[in-house]
Amino acid sequence: MQSDPQVKCICKPGIMRDNCPSCEGTGQMIDFRAIRNRKTQEQIRESITTKFSPIITGYSPFFRNVLQVMLGNREQWVTEKYCGFYITSDGFFLGRTLNSFKDSFIGRVDDLTRNLNLIINEAKLDSEETAYLNSLPNIQDWRKI
Image (cartoon, rainbow, N blue to C red; front, side, top):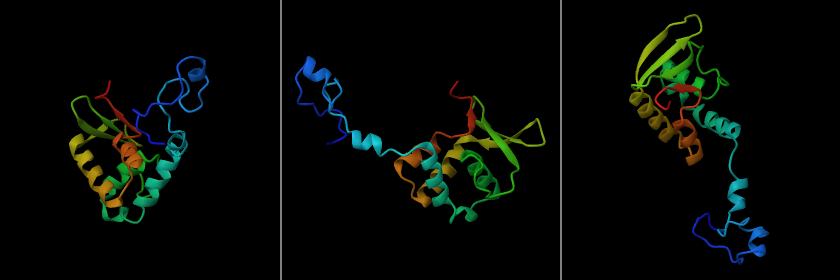
């Protein structure tokens, strides 16, 4: 079965369609194999960590810290300096250290996304992993609110 949403089911409208295991009443074929094969968030994080581990030393300690926070601080690529990151409504990137209640100005979020794209290409992440990182996990994004 294709994952193409335009593939029509062969069932007829009515009771037959309501009980159809292939389309679950939608009239469109559902690719259940593709749904079952999707990775969980934890599997995606583990896969990204595995792909980043051999190449991470070529990046600055600061960027390793950003990635470490984004992946939930599971890996110790750097002694933590920042414990959280924020994106302001006007697109600036701020970091918070463990010992301070003040946020440090880091730069524009455009620089972060450019650097993320570089490491995504170098690590050869798949589409699910790329989408996960591009969603900026564990970073409070005030542009979305």
